[in-house]
Length: 326
Image (cartoon, rainbow, N blue to C red):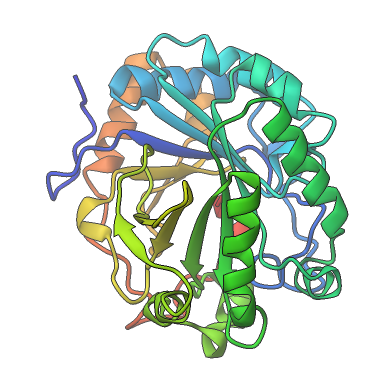
């Protein structure tokens, strides 16, 4: 029985867990240039604290866990964490969001440990443009994607944040790439989260425009896609490719929100676009009983806001996106 029901009748069954706010990339819309204020080790949750919290969330009705960051592959205990999470009886879906830069040598062991599916951030197929956006190496990401495919991780979802002055002209190329390699593709509207996210407000693209561009080459038909996220999917007619559109700005999906986020320092964020939160690390280290911790989680969910305010108050969320978790 799900005990996590917010004031608006929404059941919380999905937890996005950030295991680190550190990343080997520096996507400008995520981590501001020169940012160094990452969480110190003594303020991060340890392995046993993560496992305990995931167990408690599962007992309260959460059955879907997505491990995020920062870049989760930078966490030294990630493999043990995945193994422990996947052994919990209430968890039916364990997935990973990654930039794939370190995935080439890790995909097979992650699959064996219990990762069911992955999302990979990929905003450009042009090496120079990719480096300008991420300060990363595109060839490493492509190698990681191919390793995940060879390890039989499925589905592999490509996440592309569309920005007018950066990559809008590549949306058709990304469709072709995903058709060729059997990936699912998701386009995402840029969100004004933190200094980095606010820097791309002027680059915002309504995904209706993207769909219009693609419809000049492709014909779409409605379809469904397994998963707990907010994307609305179509299939490219005559192909296996499914394309999702994630529209937090133009057509927000707050009325069906089923998720909360837990940061690496143990902060439970109730809404990506609001400041409402519960600090769980101090509670964990006060030796509270399981039932006391569950009561705190239930009470927090009952304070979950109705919706974000990205359009009306785009500058109110100042925390860095990598701290919140993707």
